[in-house]
Length: 56
Image 1 (cartoon, helix red, strand yellow):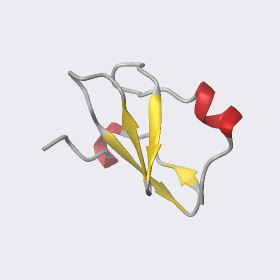
Image 2 (cartoon, helix red, strand yellow):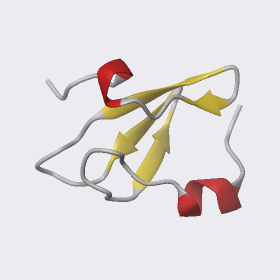
Image 3 (cartoon, rainbow, N blue to C red):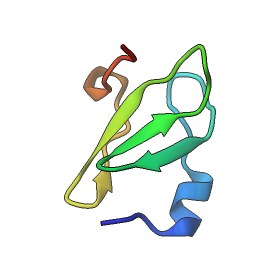
Image 4 (cartoon, rainbow, N blue to C red):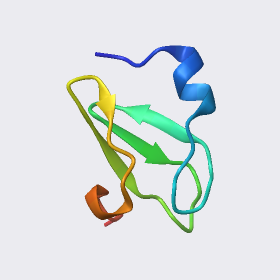
């Protein structure tokens, strides 16, 4: 389920404060040096660094 456009505009990566981009069931940090992927569970973004997937 896609997030509302207004919500995505105000969300930022908790680690580096860069904008996030929606991709499948995750929100991906757009900063190249960060790149954390945050899960979206039941339509709710889980913006916890401990829950984020590290880039490969």
